[in-house]
Image (tube, rainbow, N blue to C red):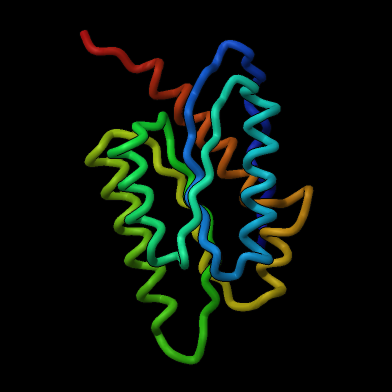
Length: 159
């Protein structure tokens, strides 16, 4: 069952973040609306945020481009968006597990928020519910998560 997306963070006109969105071209008809919603949400919540979009051929290549972005661009956060459909073999599960592990390791090792919006779905109906809607869109959710984690991490200080 789908749960509602998190509430919108308070608006900030003072933020000047740089966020890289790494999006899969594979299953683009579902990924593109998530990218658009993420960019729209960032523009509303933190209008001073610079957003760069990088395209990966598929979801498996997203961690490589995310790591490149972290190394070369040094963004404040990375949002990763893709859609993987389960098939008759375990291939999709292997890709999804590899992507999840790589994105988690990148985030923890480099101490940069990497938002995981690479969805492993059973069918196109699930994709339509999660990727194409205005009320429920995982791109909006990813943008809100990025803003929230950036704000939370800034409250931490060394003593």
